[in-house]
Length: 113
Length: 113
Image 1: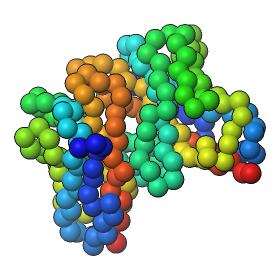
Image 2 (image 1 turned 45 degrees about the vertical axis):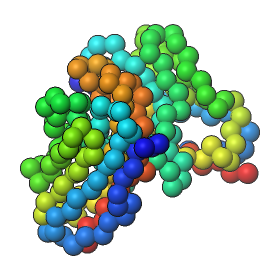
Image 3 (image 1 turned 135 degrees about the horizontal axis):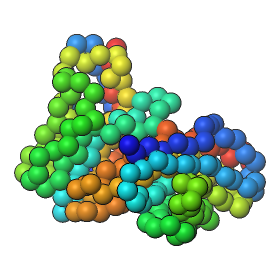
């Protein structure tokens, strides 16, 4: 597509429930990144996919967080047993192979109540 | 490790004022440096970048010069406009099999008419 698409744009969930966040990157971009932006804080790296290589999961904050990327395109970030501290804006970005410039989606604002 | 420290906000200026947002970095290796901007209600977008020492990135009247000796990449604009109100993020990337961006905490800029 023309840009990076994320859905839903907003999600309110009850503590303890699981949520899935979706990212549709730019067509042809082999690299895909997930970041988290908490209120008043910078962007925190979560996970990175590059082609068929094993993902870099070094930023995932706990084992409740996981992500997959099917067919080298769409990615889903799953948060199990959500906690209030998971409330944040989750941003997805994609880039071409070795590309330094990321294109970001508009994010999913997650609120855990 | 790699890290970025930028000037704490919020920053409030009057229209046509001179702007400086400070950014310093720590990196293993030779980083590329970026400024990203997030306008209200929009996703992050690249504002400018520099890939080697003494390079100057520029866009929309904003400039930043890659200073290796001071490990800095300060953002400047000679005359700000109300439309420049946004959150500005300094970032670096060092290639280690991937161009993973490390962001500063962001600086919120408000320009009053």
